[in-house]
Structure formats: C-alpha cells, structure tokens
Image (cartoon, rainbow, N blue to C red):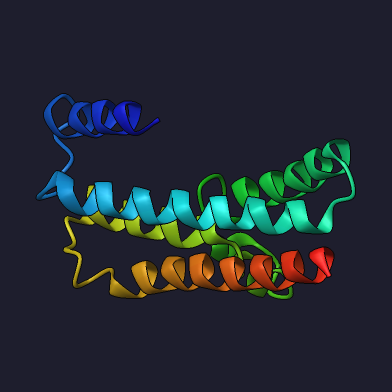
Length: 138
C-alpha cells in the first residue's frame, strides 16, 4: 500500500504537474492516516463480538467516510446537522490535507491542524482500544 501511494504521488507530480512541493509530507500524512485507521480498526474489534460483526462495523464506517469526507461531495453541500459527523471522521482531515498539498501547494506547517487531528484520532482510538481490551481480559 505504501509503494502504491508513492507511485500515485509521483504520477500526480510528474504526469499531472500537481504543485506539491515534496513527497515527504505526503508520506508522513499517509502514515499517520493509516495508523489512525489501524487504531480505529482495533477499537472496532474490541466492540465486535465476532469477525462478521466487525466487518459490518467497518462497512458502516467506510461508506459515510467516503461520502462525507469531502472526497465525493463538498462538506459545505452536506446538510448542516451532518457536518459535525463529517468532521468526526479521520478521512475528512486526510482529504483536506491531500487537497492542500496537491492542489494548493501548501506546506506541512499550513496543514498542521489536519496532522494534529489525525494524530489525535490515532492516540485516542489506541487508548480506547487498550481500555476496552483490559476490561475484556479481566
């Protein structure tokens, strides 16, 4: 997956001439995003009672993440009462940062809020997972 991300990023830069300055911030963002999603997956596995239930929980999260992250529709086009839900999904922050890097040519410093939010998701879901896992062991 990491190799694919680098290939797509290189194609975006050299074939489509997108204005991002460096590949390093993209790789760092992708790594934090993947770790945040892994910690979310582990947290969901502590909630689910079996593998089938976990699969349904993941699908229940993936569809809203794609539709409400700003990837398919702009967040401003989502009804106002659903916009807080969009901002509670890790993919929203990833899409915002990628859009900034690739289309606006922003720097890591400009996107620090998105990095911080993804790191917060990663830490938060890891802590929740550990707390639930310890309760299950007791």
